[in-house]
Length: 362
Image 1 (cartoon, rainbow, N blue to C red):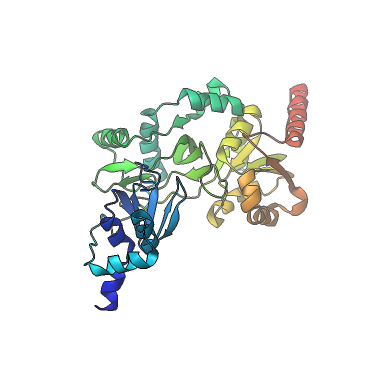
Image 2 (tube, one colour):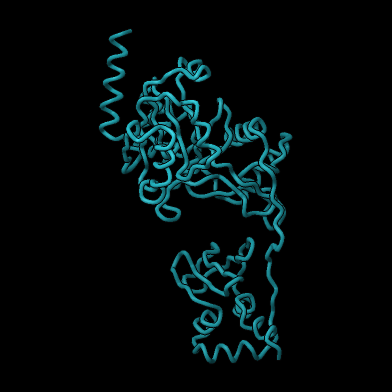
């Protein structure tokens, strides 16, 4: 028996088939199966075909192919190896070996699809309550257009069919992709869709998760770059500008202060409460191209940078150094939103005094 055949027989794919693990879906070099240990039916066990490893995100069982076979058969690793190489390998799987990805469409096309997409969704009572607890009013929740993300596969496919029936092409729209049955579908997590705007157009959707995703982040992009016929989301920033300030921006006139918030939900909250303040929402990682868009604010005296906990813990050095290079260290004032989109007390005090002065002048 040659080395190649031995590797096949002790591979995670052969082990999957020998154990008759139910394959739920796959992407690139990962196969998701029903976990044989916690008997999860949701494909929580991940088989990595590139390193022969496995891990269940539910019960956290982990290891490698031979060990998985041994554990399921209640035998030693040595005995598992002998059994596996005894018979010819079964390499049957549903892996998509070649992924077709699409170029992101322009902002006008994105806006058309996302507007129609969000109109088909609703906001659950649970998420409405959550946003109220964050400090949004019912009117603000409706105006911004928050939506609960559907997670039922049949319903998601139905929504995509409705969009296609309306004449929309989902190629090039971040978040949408073709599943293993070649149906148009979209990425989903338990959480809230947060629209990201550019000149009143929806150019992207941020996802505010119900629970942490990885390294404590609660916010990710609605993107499908790792899926077949999928599209990567741009790392966009968002300007929330009072109507009376828009002409000033065009003429690059001097602004007293701006607030930069390291997540879009927090940016919306600050802008909703302090309606005369320019607020910039940014993701927890910001690209050079997007940073350049802030050049319009060259003459700002005070730049309040409010970071959520994830950005502060994992990306603050990169973000702060970028902003210091742009505005100067003496103009940057730092703050942290520790939980639930709370606004730091020093920023609230400053903006409250500013609004009081403006009312007296008016």
